[in-house]
Image (cartoon, rainbow, N blue to C red; front, side, top):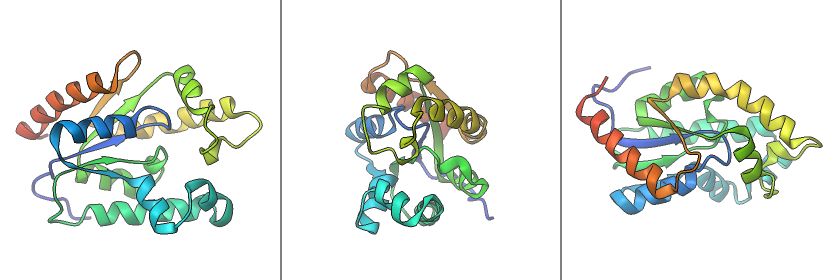
Length: 183
């Protein structure tokens, strides 16, 4: 895979479902004016159905294939600066982890298990949580994904007790430093 000579100045948000990627993405969009790309919403629009239906009708692999395809599309040169909010499981594929790092400044929004449970169990739109023990599923998935988020991210932010405005403000300072002093 060809690595760009300079990293595009995108801010890419990764993290477990319910950690605040979409909310923080909207806040960053307000502050920067960069285009906001919510990958889950684009996949739903293109498929003409919600993610829960994609999982039910086509399976998780089909959804992950769409996710990887969209990520490759976002990595095409010449795109404008963007805020990119990803799905929680995008880091499951090695190819995606490489693409994410080539796409820009990758920020892992993290929150404790109990916070994630509180935020996600009240919504029925999370296909991976349609199980008899969703809390156990969250625990298992978080343990599986934790090292992959850590491998992919340039920065980890614990969002506990912070407003989306506070998280976005801190990220902007870190992103400015990163883009002025690349690795």
